[in-house]
Length: 79
Image (cartoon, rainbow, N blue to C red; front, side, top):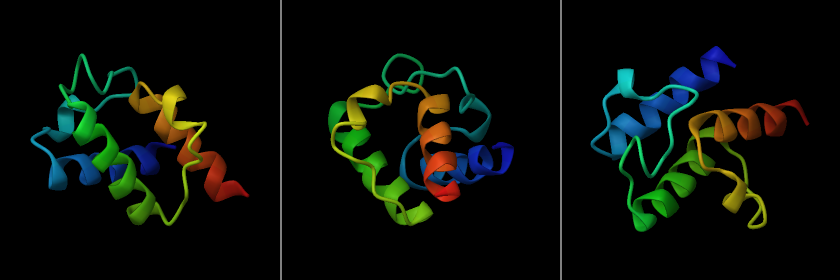
Protein backbone atom coordinates (compact mmCIF):
# COMPACT_ATOMS: atom_id res chain seq x y z
CA UNK A 1 0.00 0.00 0.00
CA UNK A 2 3.04 2.24 0.34
CA UNK A 3 3.41 2.29 -3.45
CA UNK A 4 -0.24 3.27 -3.84
CA UNK A 5 0.30 6.14 -1.39
CA UNK A 6 3.29 7.37 -3.40
CA UNK A 7 1.32 7.24 -6.65
CA UNK A 8 -1.63 8.98 -5.01
CA UNK A 9 0.71 11.71 -3.74
CA UNK A 10 1.66 12.34 -7.37
CA UNK A 11 -2.00 12.71 -8.32
CA UNK A 12 -2.50 15.35 -5.65
CA UNK A 13 0.73 17.26 -6.25
CA UNK A 14 0.29 17.35 -10.02
CA UNK A 15 -3.31 18.55 -9.93
CA UNK A 16 -3.67 20.53 -6.70
CA UNK A 17 -1.56 22.80 -4.53
CA UNK A 18 -0.55 20.02 -2.15
CA UNK A 19 3.00 19.17 -1.13
CA UNK A 20 3.90 15.45 -1.25
CA UNK A 21 5.07 15.39 2.37
CA UNK A 22 1.65 16.73 3.46
CA UNK A 23 -0.10 13.63 2.11
CA UNK A 24 -0.13 11.06 4.91
CA UNK A 25 -2.52 8.23 5.72
CA UNK A 26 -4.31 10.14 8.48
CA UNK A 27 -4.74 13.41 6.57
CA UNK A 28 -8.26 14.65 5.91
CA UNK A 29 -9.01 15.98 2.45
CA UNK A 30 -10.98 18.95 3.78
CA UNK A 31 -9.39 19.92 7.09
CA UNK A 32 -5.74 18.98 6.52
CA UNK A 33 -5.26 19.21 2.75
CA UNK A 34 -7.75 22.08 2.40
CA UNK A 35 -9.52 20.73 -0.68
CA UNK A 36 -12.80 22.40 -1.57
CA UNK A 37 -15.83 20.30 -2.49
CA UNK A 38 -15.20 20.83 -6.21
CA UNK A 39 -11.50 19.97 -5.79
CA UNK A 40 -12.50 16.79 -3.96
CA UNK A 41 -14.75 15.77 -6.86
CA UNK A 42 -11.92 16.52 -9.30
CA UNK A 43 -9.52 14.51 -7.11
CA UNK A 44 -11.86 11.51 -7.34
CA UNK A 45 -11.88 11.81 -11.16
CA UNK A 46 -8.09 12.17 -11.34
CA UNK A 47 -7.68 9.16 -9.06
CA UNK A 48 -10.02 7.02 -11.15
CA UNK A 49 -8.05 7.91 -14.28
CA UNK A 50 -4.62 7.43 -12.71
CA UNK A 51 -5.43 4.03 -11.19
CA UNK A 52 -7.86 2.82 -13.89
CA UNK A 53 -10.62 2.22 -11.37
CA UNK A 54 -14.22 3.31 -10.91
CA UNK A 55 -15.18 4.54 -7.45
CA UNK A 56 -18.81 3.69 -6.76
CA UNK A 57 -21.02 6.69 -5.98
CA UNK A 58 -22.09 5.13 -2.68
CA UNK A 59 -18.42 4.79 -1.63
CA UNK A 60 -17.46 8.43 -2.20
CA UNK A 61 -19.03 9.73 1.06
CA UNK A 62 -16.90 7.18 2.96
CA UNK A 63 -13.67 8.68 1.57
CA UNK A 64 -12.65 11.38 4.01
CA UNK A 65 -8.98 10.63 4.66
CA UNK A 66 -6.05 9.58 2.51
CA UNK A 67 -6.08 6.11 4.07
CA UNK A 68 -9.67 5.62 2.88
CA UNK A 69 -8.83 6.15 -0.77
CA UNK A 70 -5.56 4.20 -0.57
CA UNK A 71 -7.47 1.27 0.92
CA UNK A 72 -10.16 1.55 -1.77
CA UNK A 73 -7.55 1.62 -4.55
CA UNK A 74 -5.79 -1.38 -3.04
CA UNK A 75 -9.01 -3.38 -2.82
CA UNK A 76 -9.99 -2.42 -6.38
CA UNK A 77 -6.66 -3.56 -7.76
CA UNK A 78 -6.89 -6.90 -5.95
CA UNK A 79 -10.19 -7.77 -7.65
